[in-house]
Length: 74
Image 1: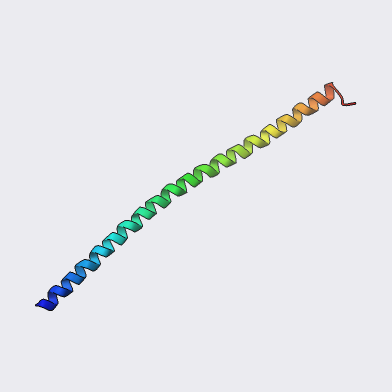
Image 2: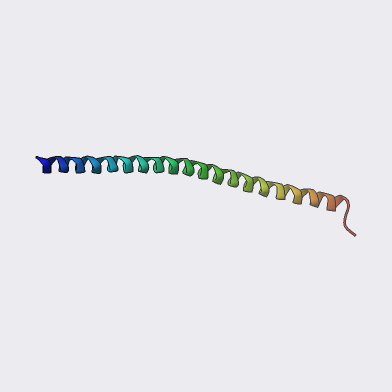
């Protein structure tokens, strides 16, 4: 009987540790989901800024061409 109690105690201890590990893994998984969403948002913002930068460069070139046309460099 004493041996059975020791076995049950050991099983309970192992189950508690497994429960702790499962909870920790779930917390890490949730944290990773949050970071993945943040990364996707940052990638979207970078893409948007790159597109806007490209448009601005084209606009600046068009304006420079217009200035050069009306006021040709010497």
